[in-house]
Length: 366
Image 1 (cartoon, rainbow, N blue to C red):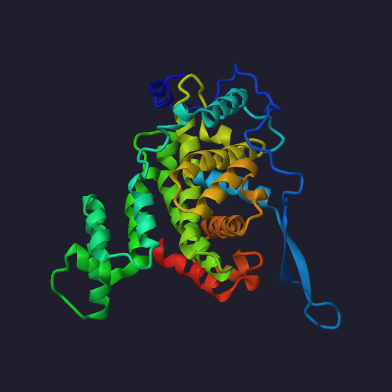
Image 2 (tube, rainbow, N blue to C red):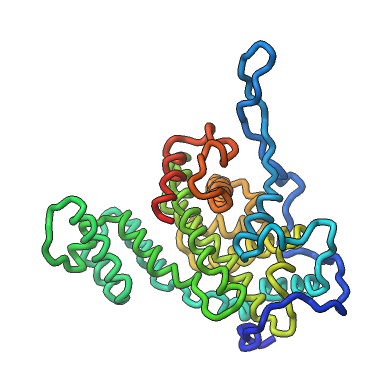
């Protein structure tokens, strides 16, 4: 299929009644999770006191497969009432669609344009910012090549000064870099340079899910950074991991948008037997796309690991941190507004205080 065909738009609808539904084929998946991959999470929870009135801790099983399906339904806008049941066979189009996705994963050419803006400037900036002796003038020179990023950095610095009521004058770019420091610069770069990756236009699956994909990526980035910091990992590696993991969703949905000869709707994709297949291909695309960017050794290793075995089977420290951030971000998205974290998050009491604070703080960022 040509790249132009890959990007062609189509109108999503369910297969017609004449199309016979078939089960998802047992074709070789792009990644194979080992048999030891976790299928549930046993977490402590205060149980009903026994007869003597003494409270005891009893394990509560969190079915991550069910959460994955619920989260995907939220992501693509499928209500609980419209979601297909496990007893229904997947639509006939799913088999060819998964095979086509595997072709995209295996092809550098077909993957090339799945994301609209490859962050070519990011590796240079990351290397500069990781140098403790970096010059604010040098960084400002690099940032000045991107007008939008320059504006964001100055905006961030101005907000810092206004909050401290220390200065009301004009702030130039070099001074702004010095004011907000490395952490502020990294956030500005991630927000401005990487966000266009998630943006889509039109009436396609990826366009309809774009806002939710970005919001979830932002939450996951914050949580992953907090968790990484508690595990003696680089918080910014955690932040980038959380932010960029959802690029796999963007690439997956954009690839599906381009299959102009396959008519598929969001309800078809939300089938309980189909979501796990999409998750594995999301992770494979994340690894194939983000790995070559060489953002840092830790991110490179994570992309390779997740791309090969999937996030649920990751065993590296950063992979485990990302998986937990992915869990917490999904629970936040699925919880009702104004929810109590202790009631909505299994294992809440086992989380460190900084991670709990980060979760609670998500309400301030939307």
